[in-house]
Figure 1 (cartoon, chains in turn brown, cyan):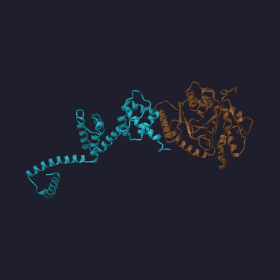
Figure 2 (cartoon, helix red, strand yellow):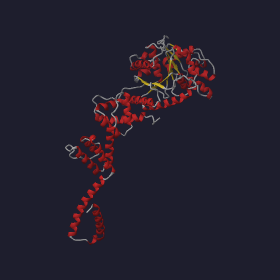
Figure 3 (cartoon, chains in turn purple, brown):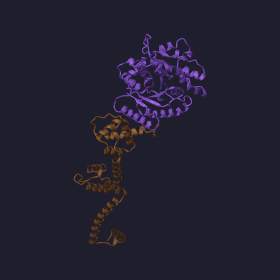
Figure 4 (tube, chains in turn brown, purple):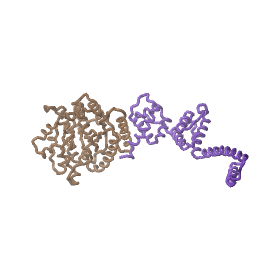
Length: 305
Length: 209
């Protein structure tokens, strides 16, 4: 068995990358018994702090200096690539069974987290270009030995397309674009697809067997059933996908995963409670939507037997 | 006497009258002048009417009405007349051929031939367009995009020509609009026109970012 690796990316911020990563991963692990690893690549550490209380993360890092703490995060993967070292230890860094209750009991044994560090902010600064290029294959190499342990690996990308995100694209089997239903997102989506196409050329020699770096699925977040505004925006997105497929800019299998996730205050609340929404508010509309989305996701991306 | 000969004679008369106007006097001359003025006014009107009919656009209107007679039944012509601000007295009782002639006359007299060519031509083209494919959601959206590339008036005409009430509702739903099963066609068409154009504009691969 080998995990399928998914990068959730969009250079636009606030479109639901972390929300979808955390909540879809939790549904897959808790409701469908799939083994899922969430890899936080964003210096904002949003996935990390959604699934871990601050005290838990501190405990995870306990005893070390700020420098040694970073070793237990995705930061070390990239630092190793720059320095040419092999310090990263996935076994020590991965937080197994998240989230946990106040007694430290695992709520979802199959859901694991590789946390991020705010130091990722600086990882690309002050590094010479040859070392920067070494960042790209770093994640691919780091995840390779973990693939046999999971059904799905979700990469929560930062809101840009710099080297860390490029590393995620290279390490992924599939790209998923979280999307807000409005024209600005639609316009950004076209740009994103063009940039990915450009990136793809430079990936050829790094991973010859890699399929094209193309968007395989989109997830609409912050949907509201009020008036026609959101329905029209989703229809335009569907139309855009069909046109881009006709023009060969998107794979024919690229799909908009249904249903759109409705805007729900319970989602924001659940982040502050450090739990996926299915634990914090199981009867909420967001929980219902994520459960339905999980079915749709598994239909589109069945896990390996 | 031909009209050309009359024109030459009137030109000569005008020049002579201009030269000798001060010499004319008396009731007899005044009466002739008044009678002539009335006839000249009538002739001017006739000439102006003839001139207005003698344009490429007016001839094109006649061609369109004749070549596509089947797609311009009386009710449709009455509707177009209303749109062009024309009056067609007796439209309800006229035969189709008579009404087409009246329509043509009215267009020429009102000087709206260019607008009439546009509206009649667009409608005739819409009639000749292939039947809309609304067999699937992607096909419906493709139809929406195709329509959206046209002008608002052309879309409206094509909707009128080729789309049933149910088709218009289907298109509105394909655009993401909430539509009841009884939504009225008349109110829905302007909405579909707007969203078809927006759909085309927003999803175009050649425009924007």
